[in-house]
Length: 151
Image 1 (spheres, rainbow, N blue to C red):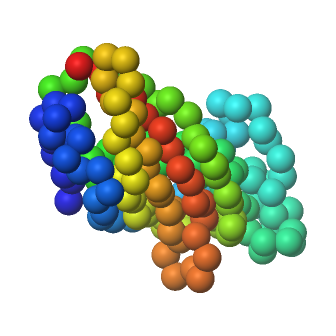
Image 2: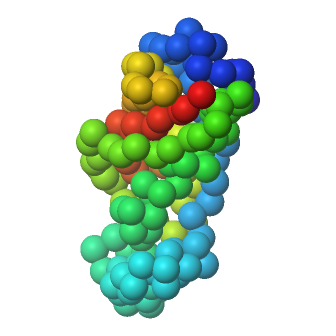
Image 3: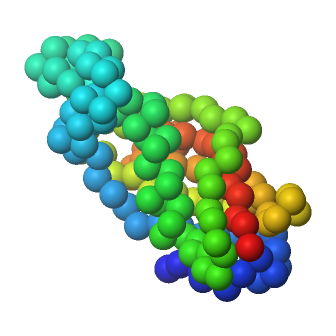
């Protein structure tokens, strides 16, 4: 269930709040192959199911950066900011990939709005995110994302 805020003042009131958990999405071989084509990263552990089945993970795995890129659609399930002119991904403070995402796995985001800080013309938010893998003891990714919203 998404939290919707209207404008920067409402967003500021959410600082320090848990944003909840997104729905699960499946990481398919098709998605992995599309990402490989987009980035030029065709390493066999991602795109060769037969060879990957005999490799260290027993199956193809998603690129770490594919997992990271899925933060955005998962995050938009948690927080919708309306009443602003511009939304910008500003960067990341840190990212770790504790566990690989095997093809066919489902992932979801657990998010917390760690802070909301003023910047010229708007605010910068810091989101602590954990991308979980269904049934796995360790998450796929732990990250701290920065976004800016301008009035």
